[in-house]
Image (tube, rainbow over all chains, first blue to last red; front, top):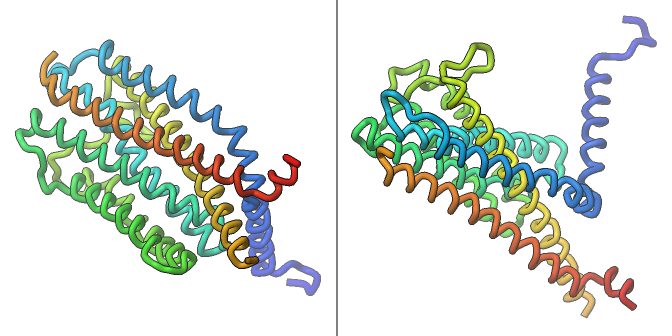
Length: 262
Length: 48
């Protein structure tokens, strides 16, 4: 390479710095609050409309399954909750990466706020799965690979919630939570492929990215609408909690400054 | 409708969890906004 050429390490370092500085533009709390005020109505309205229509469609208008009967209507809750449980953890892991690599302050807060919401969706997935399993399998719970890996996901969420609050210094809590968030990502492919890798009672995926869905369109459409509604709801809840967290941090800083000035 | 108690329980749980999180987030943001408005010096200056 000639002396004037750009060294590949320099280029990647520059790209990293550029990505970090563009990310830090959104670290300004005032800018985040203004942006989130604009974005929030575009999340809340579709969340309500799509969730209500998807669940109403699934409950009252979608056909019953020829084998499972009406119990299949639990799918319109269970499957979106399962998707969001995994997607939420992926979001938490991305925030953990942003926190560890670029020390992005909003990424720390976002990870803290995603944790309880993700745990709630995972609990809904486990509970609705149990309510679906009892009439279909004759058992509330089996130690099947899919169920167990989702239970591990729930414990990872709980661990993150506890860990980020376990230190007197919040920054140390964020760092510890970010490491757990990244380590826990290994569970996501295990959840996804558990039904292929092991002989499980849980059915394999009916919808894949590459192949055609093995589900009747009359059932598929309400499922997709419900999943989209759940996704918007998840995003709206996290953004609202993040708004509150940013304001609470400012309140703490102001009260501390007042106490020190006295 | 077959298996009605199981279906009703699932939908009730979904409403409870989604509604609970939405309501708690809304209440939290409202309280934070009110407290911040009461102590933020920039807002106090703009009020004068």
